[in-house]
Length: 134
Image (tube, rainbow, N blue to C red; front, side):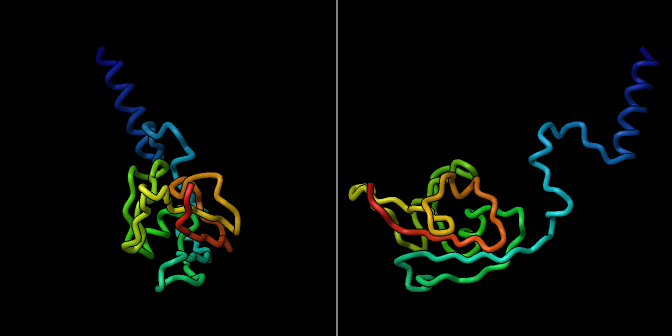
C-alpha cells in the first residue's frame, strides 16, 4: 500500500513539474498559446440603435465570441448563457414576443448558422444585429 501511495505522489509531482493538467478532458476548451492575446479587427452594427446604426470597428482577442463582443459594446439581456444564450434585449430595445420579434444575428451579410455564444470571431468579420419577426 505504501508503494502505491508513493508512486501516485511521484506521478502527480511529475505532472505538476511538467505543467500537465490531468483534469483537462477536452483540449479544445484550452486556448492555444498562439491565439492567446492575438488581436483581430471586426465590425459590428446594431440596427435600430442610434448609437451604433452604422458598422463600428473593434479590436478584440482572437478567441472571443460574437456574444463577448456584443456584451463588451452594448447593454445586453439574455436568456441562458454561453452557447445557449438567446438575446432578449440590446441597449434597452427589447424584442417583443407578442409581436413575434427576435434579435437576429447576421455574420458577414448572411444569417448566422450558429448562436452568437458559439461563434468564434475571425479577423474581418462583420456582425450585425437586427430586430426581425417570425
